[in-house]
Amino acid sequence: AQSVTQPDIHITVSEGASLELRCNYSYGATPYLFWYVQSPGQGLQLLLKYFSGDTLVQGIKGFEAEFKRSQSSFNLRKPSVHWSDAAEYFCAVGDNNAGNMLTFGGGTRLMVKP
Amino acid sequence: EAGVAQSPRYKIIEKRQSVAFWCNPISGHATLYWYQQILGQGPKLLIQFQNNGVVDDSQLPKDRFSAERLKGVDSTLKIQPAKLEDSAVYLCASSFHRASNNEQFFGPGTRLTVL
Image (cartoon, rainbow over all chains, first blue to last red; front, side, top):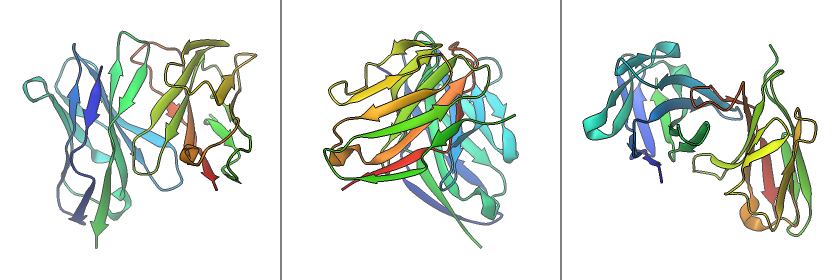
């Protein structure tokens, strides 16, 4: 069965600093990978996704993520964090044999210091 | 384009009571999902519909949870009777179809508190 681990429950960064959120997955084949963001009281919004091809994917709001098969990782990065980026971030893996079913990690809560 | 609508946004009930949540997906989306998100955890898929048929409900506690999508558009998730551990946010999502590269669009969720 597939699984996703987000090792960092909370991360605090200063505004303007760089950010990296970690995600490790377990899946038997080539995974479909996603990053979602959830602001308080809101649903999840897709930041970016990886299906195949270039292992560095660009998303919305200046985010990018890199798929590393050898490390089973799909870490999310942003070069300069804004206060509005404070939210909860979820990594997910899709089962491409089971019709768009997603398994989510436990999430990382990002706090941004002024 | 209107997003996924859910109601109510908040619900407080006592254990052993019943509750129902409603979801209206994005127009034209054939696939609808219900997720349960317990505080401090990621969402967990409960059930997936393709039009009015169930694709997967393997993680739905069928002794107390039920869901339907009778006309293949909006959907209702019911809990009867509720337990304390059902306190969570219930998220509805939809996608154009169930191929794995289809983006799922999420509604704002219904926050359920069971006392």
